[in-house]
Image (tube, rainbow, N blue to C red; front, side, top):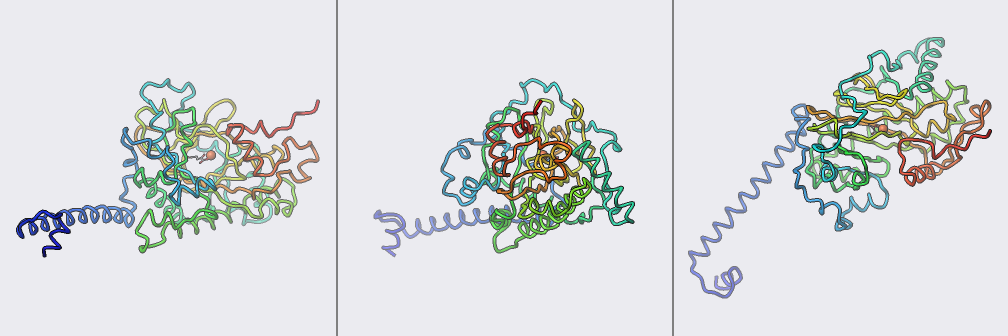
Length: 422
Ligand SMILES: O=C(O)CCC(=O)C(=O)O
Ligand SMILES: [Fe+2]
């Protein structure tokens, strides 16, 4: 007993009673710790089991005094997740807690071209393509493809209905995305990139970019639920990626053939394609007119298929104005990316788009973007060079991405354009 007492309290002699008292205090402290832990875990898994009960619009408002040094310093280099980001730029979170440091929504000027999140185009203005018609007779199918080609030439955007992706799968993905965005700031910032610090606009959103083929999805499983519990995140993401990749490739092929190009000419651009998933969450914002969800940009991919939580906020730039896209739960929104514009020698448009925020409800969007292999050279097939010479510099996808970053321009393809000969 003497040696135990010495070990516990040092050399000072103490009574048995004090030791008992101390042990009791220690026991009680331990108990209260584990009970806090248990409460935390059970409320978390409750949300997991019953996603419909999630309060989708709250919980991401990070305290104003969120310590910035935690994310902007380098100590995270020792962390696995951060390392992978730093080396491979696999994924990214633009955390609200980071951008909040720069975000003075209360004293900034109101954006001159602000359009409210619930001001929409008329429903019938954005082209709608019905995939069921592709299965119809040859004439119907040909007409539907033509309509889809027109949409890409005129808008670079269209709604795809009867696309065959189960609503349940979309819901599962969106649930995983909500789960992710509901993690604590510290957890999310394991994927942070500080990107938003460089942005000029006052950005009110969080986003994650992940590449299923490169990212260790188990890391997310472990973050979202106890490791032994399940692999829900990775299972859902892989299933979704497979389904969407097949669909995206099918659309690309139909479009190419619709342009009069032999399907096999696109094989080299579709071989080794990988997806990038972009999940964006915009919490309610007290002064939407002074902030921005995603600033105007074009997508640096072939094609993007996306779905959102139905609140509105996506706007595209068309004929000199910003137009709100009305959300549609039953459809996937398809948009042409820079790579497809380059590969069609400018026949398809990679449209500039942005998202605005609102006061009332959080908005989630989930985008699946198809990117070509890094080393493939982006030169349009000969069929599309007959009537006009190539308008774009012949660059590999990796070179194009590098140039886009160097230009610090994510909203124009000007840097890829060749000077027009007189
Ligand atoms: O949130 C949206 O609707 C658009 C998302 C988007 O444009 C993107 O992630 O590139
Ligand atoms: Fe985009």
